[in-house]
Amino acid sequence: MLDTLINLVKERPLLHRDWFREGFRHRLPLMAFLLGFQGLYFPINQFLSAKGGGTNVALAQIDGNMPLLPIFVIAYALGFAVMPILPLYAAWKFPRDLFQQYMVAFFLIMCCGYTIWLVFPAYVVKAPVSGDGFLMDIIKSLHSNDDNYGTYNAVPSSHVYYVTLAMCYYLLYNRRLLIPFVIFAVCNALSTMFTHQHYFIDVITGFVLVAAVFGFSQRVIIPALRKWEQRIGVVGVS
Image (cartoon, rainbow, N blue to C red):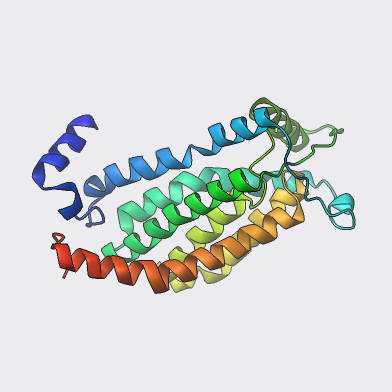
């Protein structure tokens, strides 16, 4: 991995290199950076938990009556699993322009999410969970693990916005995925509430952030980036 990074840097100046060119090997350094950046979720959560304070955004009429449905922990776990898999698969399969669009939005939504968490820290209060069974045990484990690194980073829900943003670009890649992907995005969002990992506002703000980032990235950032690449002569950009 280190040798690959060194060789890529030696090939040409960093700003003139096409980091989005086709071929998984060429995209690997970018993916390593972005997935590493995604890992800032944990230290931010720990920092906010240690700092204390923050806001609880639970809505009594909605969140107070939200049932705990163990079956939804399956969708919740799948959401966790696909968070790194979806960008990695895109690095393997997506054409250059679409991959660039996805990665720019991916980075932007992380920056937005981190900023919101730090400026407006919000937390989730986990009620005691009772009951037996394999799925219920997973929920208990999730709640227990949250106690170890904090229950902040709530608004917006990264579980919602990472998966939903990926769905947007995968649908541009293959329109036939519309129905299964919409179903999965909805189930993923519901799973955050039915496992009591998030509140209703967390989910809504997650969807709103995706819409804002997707629109701003497609209409403003990508056109500006393409013009800049052409001006400085990025290899592979026409």
